[in-house]
Image (cartoon, rainbow over all chains, first blue to last red; front, side, top):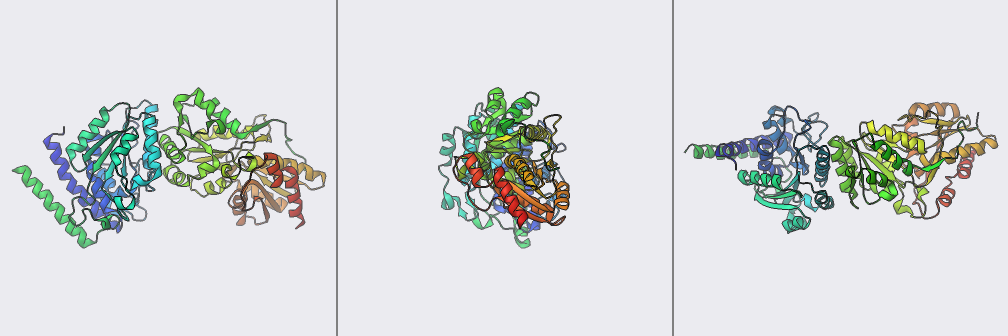
Length: 285
Length: 319
């Protein structure tokens, strides 16, 4: 259980993260706001609550690892890492600019905190399996986390990977599905329906949990359960809202892959600041 | 000059076998060496390793895409993975090799066996014939094709310490030994002059080196002094040695068990185009599929045997 102070810090920071994330995407003049906002709360929980890691020593051998298989959501990861102390927040607005280590999709050899280069969907999950095998072979206690998208779940490689992790009883592996129900060409159910998704993963012999992907308590509890599960990997279906936190972006397919204009950014920031202030006054009351 | 500097010694081993023996031997002292296979361990010869070091062998089933990316993850956690399948099937996972391996800076060793028409009866779908071309295009990827057992063992040992991804191309058919075993040392990126000569240079790699040496012998009997260069490292290729040969012999004949587009022939043309442009003839598969047959019959059919190479060389010299 997270204590109230931690919960409040996480909630308060969730607005700062969203503002920085959208500011970076606007500065980059392209990017994927929808899927960053749906994934943000899970990523914050990973780096601020769950994972054992050292921002000043990104290649610490005993660290827990996070592979962002849905690489297009990387502005959210950059933002969380900056807030966690891996690099300066000043770097964020260089997103997608020539010469910046903040590539449009993760490039691990340019930015040490990226565990793998991703962006061609379906592969990061398999890379995470290799890491889970690798750290176990070395006798390390490190855990490996990977996040996939629901559109990404249409890739055949996802199911090759889904078959292989339980074979190797990788209980040091936890995969999170950012179940935001949208992809570039439309709603997932229309493009290529992946349901019943929980049944599929259970049938593939995973420990399957379903949570609200914006509820910090539920996210943290799920990670704790994953850690306590022995003999099989855990799959967390995080029910999320694409564009979460910005009224005009929420559940709008059009916000999958376009950057906000400066005016739209200002509107989004105002909304997020207002919500954050409301949180503070509630906390004070 | 003109006679083989190192005649074929009679030892004949498939490079897949030499690979299988090398990983078993090196696995003893190199804990970081791990091996993955996709239900072809009997054919790729990773099976002995799997029996001796089961905890370091990963049977990934018939799911090569996942295997390639998993190998990348193992490399990124500090291990040295040799990822085995047929060359044709690895090539099919180009996207995984491109992003999970190369773009992720994962030092994976992809081992593609059953390369070329030399596999014989199984036919085109099982033959790696475009693998060199595709692998060569990827930034940071090294491409090695050993010509005999000594080169294979040397290449595997070298690859334990190589930084970056690499593709090792092995054969199903036996390869006559073309190197001298006394003090043999594999030198990454260095071509080997196997036969000296001045009339033309035959540049061969892997399965075609032995036949090229025998072709040079045959040509010597007919008064043609052919040089034979063995290019085991196709990328990065030994430009200096090729330039020297171009200057000294004026004509270059490349011989490969692979498509002539983008393979050894393509690599040699690219290397010489802006340094020492000379007449080059690329011999191999000219934009055609391989087919079923005996390995010997196919080498005759595609003129990759000694007699075929000698006849192609003479035609080229007559032009």
